[in-house]
Image 1 (cartoon, helix red, strand yellow):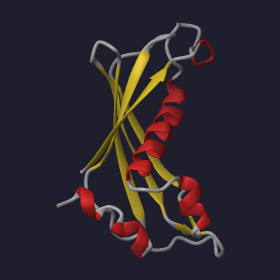
Image 2 (image 1 turned 45 degrees about the vertical axis):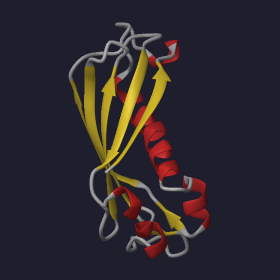
Image 3 (image 1 turned 120 degrees about the horizontal axis):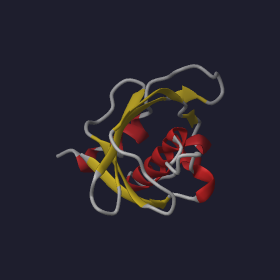
Image 4 (image 1 turned 135 degrees about the horizontal axis):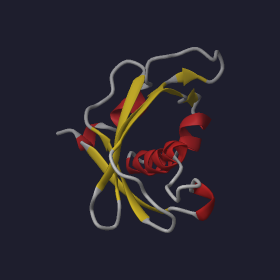
Amino acid sequence: MIRSETKIRVRYGETDQMGYAYYGIYAQYYEVGRVEAMRLLGFSYKEVEDRGIFMPVIDYSIHYKKPAYYDDELTIVTFLKQIPTGMRIPFEYECYNSMGELLNTGIVTLVCVDKISGKPCPMPTWFREAFTPFFP
């Protein structure tokens, strides 16, 4: 299993009139966590794109439990719980405040797309092999 933790502080511009972190901002927070999880695999999104693969989001779901507030330090925990097969890569998330309270959980699924054709494609071997050390 791949597990990474990323710290993010809620900025004032990310809050709504009620003082809560705006519900839509979590997609960006999850993306920050996902980028860091990819680095654990040994490459960045840019490197994957340079090798001919785009990875657009095809599904996003979130379950809110508690709000975050301006200036809260959040921990975004990102998981890849299994080696992806085919062309889809499901990332799972947990978001905690500094008191360790679970604020929300989510799943974001990406799909591999050939950069030249713009069509979905199987995950390349070099990409799939990067997962192997994390799944004994």
